[in-house]
Image (cartoon, rainbow, N blue to C red; front, side, top):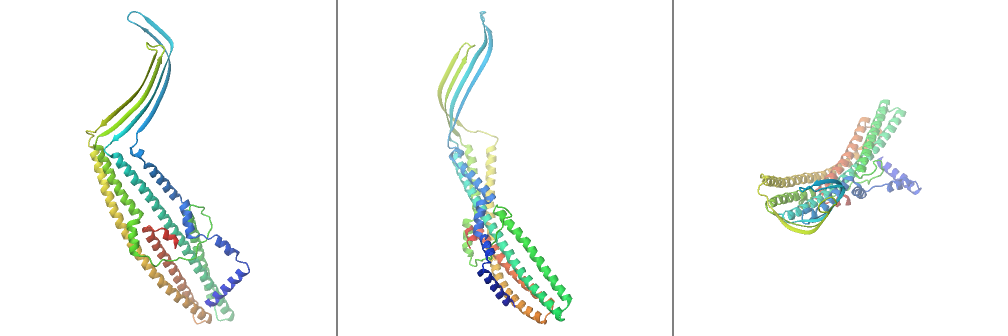
Length: 447
């Protein structure tokens, strides 16, 4: 009976296509969102990625010779003051003078250069540290991109999973409807009972309710994906109808890529390098600092009520300043010791991150292998359940099995189909996580 229904469905679909009633199908294809397109939209629009890109630009701006202290500072200052004063004075000889409303002015300008020539090599260490911070920012951006791609892929596959489960429920509703037709026919000929018919109608309503719940889950899943893509949550779209599994992932190749390319592990290594550079920079404070100072100044003063009515000076200056700290309350020692502790913590963090990632990789790879075996097993179970339901439907029509037995065959098929869908989804989740851990995010959406 199921084969006949499939043939009938194919015939109806062919008629619709050739009679021009395929416009909704075309619209659906135009509204199709592929995984590759979803990833591209997410990479372009996601707010978290944009923030990471801005932080990356800040780190790149900070990695400069000027910020590290290599370049001199050059300051230009200028001032102009005007005043109006009354003054009165008397000398020892009895001479006196009174000035009312005497004007005075002062004009000055200077150009000063300050250049640190030697600071215990701190500037070189700081430049290297800023460079490592820039590298960390680049890796953090990459890590965010990898997480985003993986999350988009999982959200996309989850929509496929729910869509497939809805199709299973719709097929089950069709079988339940056919069961009601059989029960109604039995009641008409007197071989059935009203109780069995009412039970069949209740089961059909339960199947419809299950479908409605899955439709709600589908709506929530689509909204979640739209949020990852940073677009209107109400945006409508369709997804592909298949989860394709990669059954040939190499454990050795993935592990080697994990150790070499994993962004989180690379960040931990860089943090270790940065902590070493911080210790070196603080030790540089123990050395003397040598600075070059130079400047050019101009000053002009005018005072109508003073002894000297006018004074103007110009000049050039240059000098070298040496400074060394003799004692600062052991503050340098304290900061060096704390930096060494930070260095040890960075080394421990690297070891912990390596162990954790290795453990995660081993667990996920085993889950990947088990999921593939489970998919094969559930495919066999599904074939058996389909044949069982087909036999049960024919026997139910002939009255050789009860309504309860037929309903159990229905549940067995639905359960087998859902278990297969879940196994495929779990295998894809494990596959995606393995590719993310190994840094091969392109393979996540190129399948």
